[in-house]
Image 1 (tube, rainbow, N blue to C red):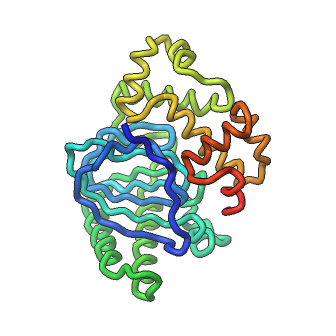
Image 2 (cartoon, rainbow, N blue to C red):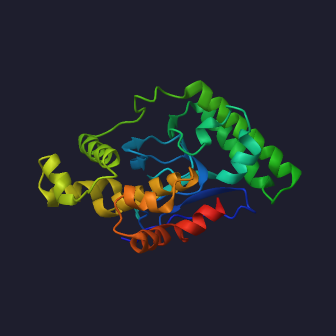
Length: 279
């Protein structure tokens, strides 16, 4: 399986809108971006990982993923996925959308991701707004900015009218997905402690091989890679908070700076120091 690095969008291109109706060229494992991503899926998604939950997402749903949130949506190479995608760079969001307002707070780093199954009326209008934004997308032209804000304002209306109780998942979760969600919750809770496949298997009273197969089935990556990805995602958040690199490395259990920097650069494309400078 080809593993993804953490892609970074060019700040000079603050947002990108796309329509895709194709098969995945290769399985895409869990990953993060330094952008908020909004997906309007017209295809049923049987195994979606967002943050700490795996679930099934019905066709006609809006998926809102804040920056630096681990996620995996499309993975099969024999299914045609139809979706509209809006990616908005976190720096541009901070400078243009947020300010002192609470509006669009669900697009901030650390926000709770959302899965919103839409009514027919919401789905039809949102699809039309995505199509309008696609037609006018051309850099920083006035028309493209106006249609972008119309799209964002309608998404904000949908979120405010349909946002579910965060303690409940609005989508179906199978028994095996529920077991994986319990594993993910345990990993995230103990991320700063030594974590191994055998330890995880012992905690859940499962055979390590069985646990490994079950985890890969629903997350499309290994337990080890998922733990590493979450550690680096946590490291990014700590760097943005101004915590020292040495403290981060020690807190997350890396054996030394060289090891931490190597893993960090492999997943983000830059060293921890470069990442801090870029922020």
